[in-house]
Length: 269
Ligand code: PEP
Ligand code: MN
Image (cartoon, rainbow, N blue to C red; front, side, top):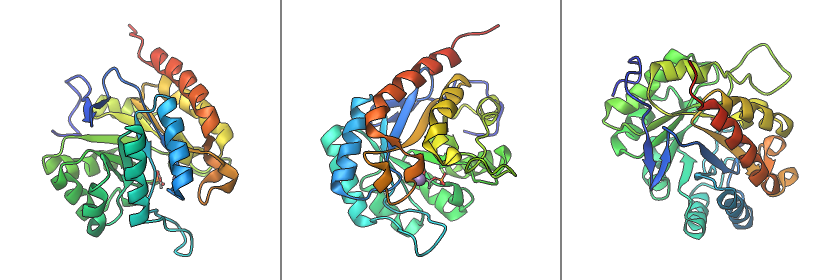
């Protein structure tokens, strides 16, 4: 598959352990920024399952700006993700940052997340392509749509067609929020590629108050799903607490965004 060819076929539908992403489906991918503890992860995973979530997210290896910040629980985080998957039946998406950690991550990940900071880590993209596991590829925070598609091509070229793209906000002059969510990327990517397009409003917003409006807009713009951070007690979160939805608001959130997604799928012309 060539990601950068004009889209002639209907959107690709990825099968993630029996769950569909793309096509008529609207995916809700939710979970904590980082796996912090057994209680935090299991409580969150239950809320994601109850809200009808498609996948559970959670980082065991975290890309942090400061080397002194919490770097994730690593192997213990992966073990907890496996436990949460067994408890809820939710497939798991988790980030891999280093090809040397790929085998360990593959033990639990149904989808490999390649984060913004690694969008152009070519050896990692190639290994993710070779291993054949579905990939969620996040747009680099200063990368163009062309560059995102070229990075996807590195995975596809290795024979792995299960790639979803994720808009997560880009750097602009604006400082009122963490990044500027580029919603134009949704229809622009869909003109160019059949790959599913997911939107992450959490990292773009940086604060919870903006997550619902950005999510509604993304769903109405035709996104194939959302990637949102959620935590049972955001005030206690080790990272990204201010942008996390509370677990008790996730079901209501899901209902609102599904209504917007239905609007985004209505035929027009
Ligand atoms: C994340 O989703 O956990 C994350 C670190 O996001 P990004 O790579 O978009 O910053
Ligand atoms: Mn985060």
